[in-house]
Amino acid sequence: MKPRRSPWFDWMVLPTIVILAFVIGYPIVRTFVLSTQNYKVLSGLPATGVGFSNYQQLYHDPVFWQSLRNTAVYTFGSVVVAVIIGLALALLTEHMAGPWRYIRTVLLTPWAVPLIVVAFLFRYMFDQDSGVVNALLRDLGLIHSNVHWLTSSTWAMPTVMLANIWTAVPFFFLVFTASLTSVPTDVVEAARVDRAGTWSMIGRIKLPYLLGPAMIAVLIMVINNFNDFAKIWAMTQGGPAYSTTTLVVYVYQLAFSSFNMGYASAIGVVWLLLLMIFAVFYVRLLQRASR
Image 1 (spheres, rainbow, N blue to C red):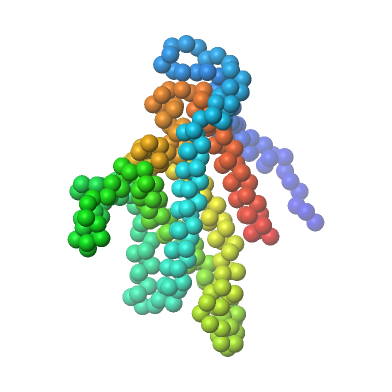
Image 2 (image 1 turned 45 degrees about the horizontal axis):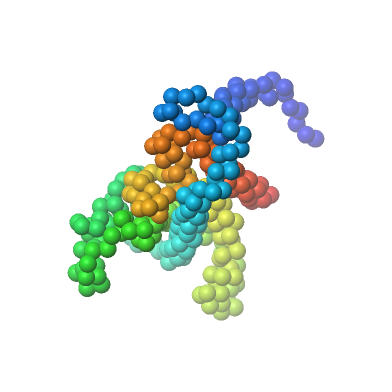
């Protein structure tokens, strides 16, 4: 027999819905309206409706397509590498006991460092003139002249991604470490009795139990990377030559450097739609995991 629902409890949710509608709903609606207008703040002219001209301009904007590609490379490339490293570290430290177990705490340290601190840390480490990375590579004889890590269109994106991977690895390490405890010991013991090798144990016994938590963790990190602004802006400000400009950085440049609010809002709408796709996948995975 289902419990009876009280209308009084349903009405208690109303204030929360009203607040969310104002705080979240109004900016979204306002952004959609601005995306159909030509509104440049410094021009001193009022906003004028242009229909879908801003969206048509997106199709012919090479910077938009480059920022979209950069977003995909930065988001998915960082996640793939971080997942592999996080999984490897979780498997390597699975059976650590005694004082060795504190290594797990050390591996989680990068996750506790503020993002802006990470950005400036890597910015100074990879400085082309006084950075410790170039100095170390010169001492090892691997390079003969300084590498322009953050001012070269070839190396800027990999360097920014390296900083992002350094902060993302502890998250996946924590997820995989916790998930490994859910692997039934009787299944593991049975596999050992059958003389399963190390790779068979990992691939056929442990990975199936890690797949569900890994998918949810990946989607969380994809959404997080998709919105990442602080590290990129502090390290390169989207340069050089838009080589590290992602969608969030491009929107910021248009809105607060060029003050072209109409066109920036159009890109923001596209950005929002892409995030909603990821959010739908995330909700469906949560629903499937709860069954």
